[in-house]
Image 1: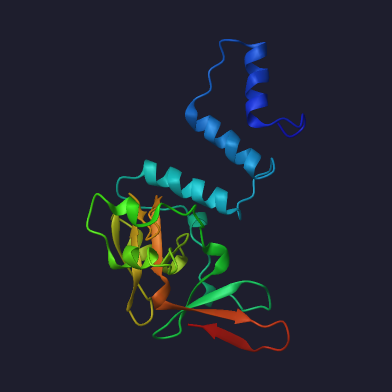
Image 2: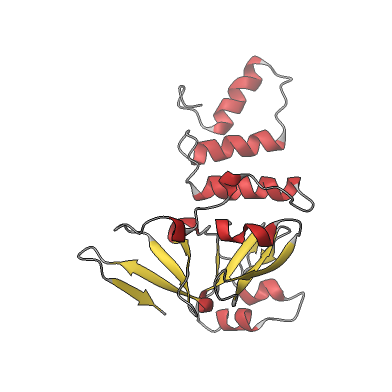
Length: 210
């Protein structure tokens, strides 16, 4: 694909032209699409790559007992804060650093309250239908401090590792965002439980968004 400048569909057509009976399983097609979307390079920092890796893990494990180390983002308390464009998210109660903006796995916005027609509409979904922010949680990749909570179970709460206040929840089976989009697996942190801390370009001052 990369050397010939072909898209995944063109590459597949070329293979079938040379070997008409060639079969490509859906999993490999998904990998080709991902490879093309990442510019024909393996970018482990890409949101697309992180989401695909987590989806593969969720299909492989019934109750995860041992997760690959590379699945976890580095705990921001274990590295020095540098001046960059990344936003740091802290526990609103105790100010413990929890994750960085590079760990957020964005998703396509769902259908809003209409996606909840099969069940009682939650308060967060009702708010999203009133012109307020539709996604009331951050869906992120697992962070190192989460590991003890994730092992051996399919779902549970995510608590602050310092003050133990509830931050959100996780489910390897997936969960529905307040915008209506189903996310699998889901590691969600409620926006109301964290503050955004942005580093200004001049000096070492920080601003917190509540």
